[in-house]
Image 1 (cartoon, helix red, strand yellow):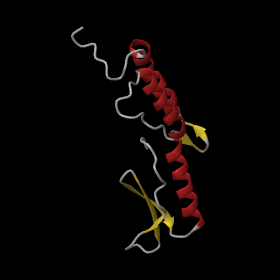
Image 2: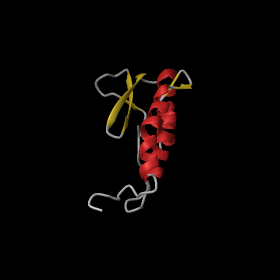
Image 3: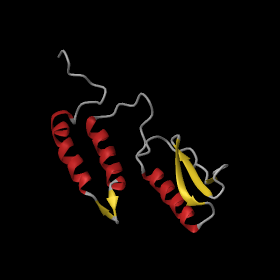
Length: 118
């Protein structure tokens, strides 16, 4: 869901026109939380912030990253994103099955590598 370094948590905010509506803006996406000031909206805000912090972060620009490292970061993210009623959904297994050939064939290559023309 939310890749990148986290400098500070986005603010819990009240919508200016919809006075009773709370929202948070994450990665330029406005997410409505429910009635402003309610326990439900604060719980949802805390859940989203925790999810944001759990998301893998990208390495600094210029860092060499292998296909294996990218797959691993995606897998970590998918394990937290694809959860329903506290249990991991089958999507995680589907992603792993789909990425297995990529891992076997190209896992040791850098993500910036190209075998074209070699």
